Each structure stands twice: as C-alpha cells, then as structure tokens.
Amino acid sequence: MRACVLIGSLVVSPALGDVYVDPTGDIATGNPNLDITQVEITDDGVDLTVRLTVNDLNADWGNYLFFIDAWEGVGSGDNDNPWFRDIAGLSGMDLFVGTWLNGGGGVAAHQHYGDGGWGDSSFDVSLVSVNWGMGIIQWNFADLVSDLTAEGITSISFEAATTGQNGGDPAIDLVGNEGIQPGWGQGSTSTDQLTYTFSTAIPAPSALALLGLASLRSRRRR
Ligand SMILES: [Ca+2]
Ligand SMILES: [Ca+2]
Image 1 (cartoon, helix red, strand yellow):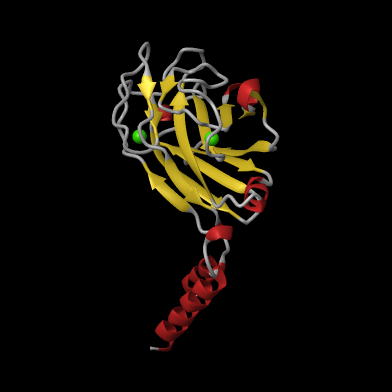
Image 2 (image 1 turned 180 degrees about the vertical axis):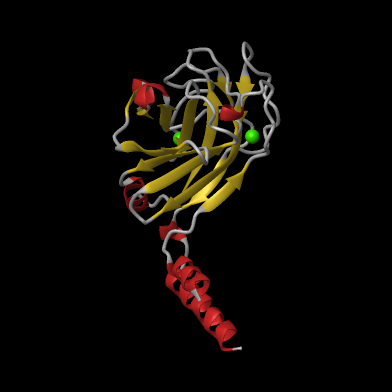
C-alpha cells in the first residue's frame, strides 16, 4: 500500500527528472571521482535543478563543470570558458558553473555577455548538496526557468564535464556520446550537447497526471 502512495505522489509531481545516462568506465585516467554516470535535470517552472552523478566520489580534488546554452546566436567562442579548461566544441555557451569539493566545497557561476566576455552570472546558482556516498553533486539555478520562459525560451542545451584543478586541464569525462577523452595533458572535445525542455513547455502536465492516477486506480481495483 505504501508503494502505491509513493507512485501516486511521483505521478502528480510537477517535476519529473529527465535522466541523461553516461557510460561507466569511459575515461582514460582511472579516476572514478571524475567518471560521470548520469545527469538528472528537473524544474518547478521557476528554478532549474541539476544533479550530476559520478561513479565513485572517493576523493575531493575533482572539479565539476556545467555549461548551458540558453540564447541562440550569442555566447562563448570555442574552447572559451572562464576556468580556462581545455575543452573544445562548446561555442555558444551562455552560462558556466564550476564546483570544487575540497575546503568545504563551493561554486562559481559565470555568464557570457557578448563582447564583454565572461562575467558574474546574473542568476543565483547554488551548490545545494554533495552526497559523497551516492556520488551526487546538486546545483540549483534560481529563477532560470521562469526568466527564460518569460522570454519565450522553452529549452536549453547543456554539457557537463569533470576536470582537474588547473587551467589547461581537459575534461576527463563529458556527459553523452563523446567516447573516451585523451586524458591529462591533452585536449578534450564535446561533440554532443544534450537538450532539456522546461516543464513549462510540456503541454497539459495535469492531464498527464490525471491519466496516471486513473490508470493506478484501475490497476488497484483489479
Ligand atoms: Ca562516464
Ligand atoms: Ca548561446
């Protein structure tokens, strides 16, 4: 009975996570703390929540990056990010988040302002939590979804990357189908940005929820 209640509450939740899976073990360096296994994104119509999962968060020295392409036709150049990591294939990025875990952890959020280049993000981005046991790093982008929706934007493209602590370090892993990156001392290249569609752009979620509840009720009646 408890399981039924739980399923019901998930069905009516306005924010089901979209999960983007990445292979385990697809890195050249043997650092499981940098091996992305999935990215989960949700939104409540206002904030965007991102959960990055790695294979084993067994060390605190890694850096974790999240790139968002929100506005078409503007954004960064290729291999142009505020932390100078050697990652090609990411032109047009508008928002950059970098997180470190050592020293208590923290987050830096930057935004690309055309000819002005990278500056501080106009959005408040927070490192919500680090789950060491599950290997999950969670960020919250306050008001990002509501602000972009107000501009008529219904989705974002994104990339997630793991890297070291120094400028010039490459991405050791990228989420998606890039395959194994060359590793330390060499460049890295993003070849596929993924897309997340805001919940505000998905038609009639309440109707979907009602359908889900109806099917649950009919199942329970049998
Ligand atoms: Ca991986
Ligand atoms: Ca852009």
